[in-house]
Length: 94
Image (tube, rainbow, N blue to C red; front, side, top):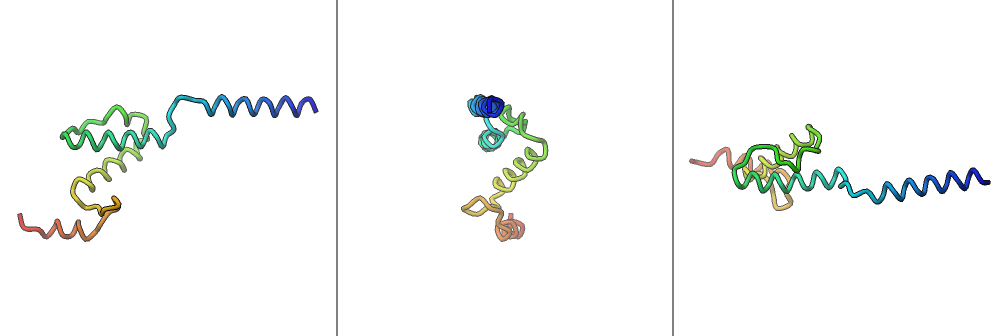
């Protein structure tokens, strides 16, 4: 009984300490990176923002591609890719 109580207390302590971490979650880091990419691209900046350094390379590439598609006006009001907008822009007269 004493071992079970000790193990339970240790697990609860570990969960409590882990839950109080001030480090942002990966999802929060990605959100911050996305916001930074929007701001940097508006200003014409092309370097990787500092907010994106903890984002995995594949995820960062996808975020940059999504930002490029958005900048080209190929997204709908929900932010989803709209193939028709892409095709319309390809046939526009300069």
